[in-house]
Length: 135
Image 1 (tube, helix red, strand yellow):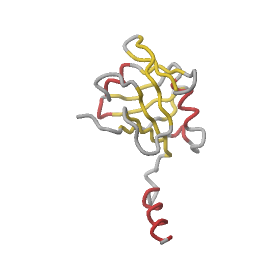
Image 2: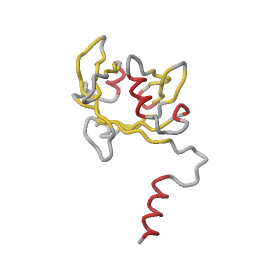
Image 3: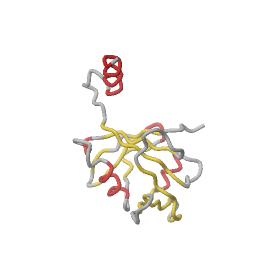
Image 4: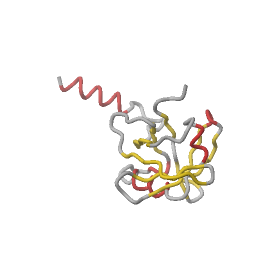
């Protein structure tokens, strides 16, 4: 059974966004045809995003998702998706099927800054500490 929420770490290389996911056999897999522009929009508030950020995605809505894309049409073994309520489209190549058995009608996304290995406390731990100290 596939994960309900998938996580990858895109980064900037060769003039576009790429990602590695050895668990599904992908190394330096590029995003193309409209998707880099969508990613640029999503990460506009993440400092140093080109060195990597977390991209969470799912075929089901999840808490705090930021955008959703809607399947439009098939082409060359992949699918074009439109950013909901916009004319903006991007093509997801057949690598999509490394994560989904069939192309989802809707895919939900969230982007977050990466926690670099030298970080001593994760954001979730700091947030929990702040919540505990407030009460």
